[in-house]
Image (cartoon, helix red, strand yellow):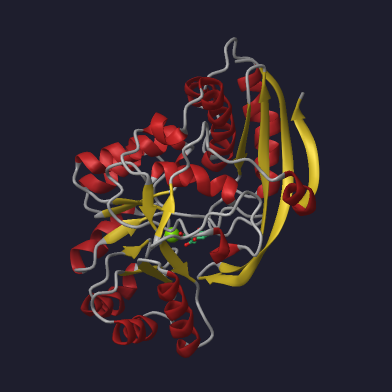
Length: 368
Ligand code: OSB
Ligand code: MG
């Protein structure tokens, strides 16, 4: 393929309800889409991070500069544009996995459309629908939390993840367990809110039979997570700390995690995400697909990935209605607790022109 144009489309879409985590509260999905035009096909992707570097070091305005000044010049210089050539061509640019993932995914969408191949087929999917979990933010009170969980379970979600932080952990988990029973698949996500000094406190969660505790300690401290895992019965799952297949291999080898959250954006795209899956699956470590409150543009490719054989736990890939009154693509609808894996070429979805127009804040060419 030949790169002809790359356009950045800044969008802002209101969330149906504020989403509070240990690192902040989100009320709007405020990010950008990338639109890549080649001589053979066009592709779309979504940048996964937020305007502020609170979940990870990357952020919307910074990613635009990284794409424009460092990634796109190297990619435009390739004699033949292929998805596989992107990571080698941009390897000298340190980090910036989420920016790299946005570019790689849009090019992959275009390339697969040119071949007429769905992403799920390309990745090696073995399912045509995937079980949907839901990530429930920190609430102002336990009754409010129980109402929300009850509503999600009534909608059909098959697994509940509670966001936790110091002061909002044992009590909400106990309340949800008592109300919905031992059979509810339940897990928690601390987004780095604790330290090793909290180990005695975190051990109190062991009695609730959680599937896992996600990223309890500081980002990238595999040693501390391994120390914690030695003292916890609950499996530790890493999110923020895993950036590629290599550090996933290290984390598994040192028992810093017994479950892996795969977010394609966090590891530089779907090619590396598949390698993360392969490494974990080869070690018998279960993986599941994380989420970043994506619009349909980011959700569609995550559903393809979540259909791989090692994804043995339900992911955070929820229906469009969990996030938005109106999505930017045809909405993903929960059916019997599952979401369908897209079956048409590329990521399988495109922005709806009318919705895109209404949610767009700014459009610019990053390369032309
Ligand atoms: O840590 O998994 C996380 C959302 C934004 C940033 C980080 C995380 C999350 C979620 C929500 O937990 C997952 C989703 O429903 O998309
Ligand atoms: Mg997480």
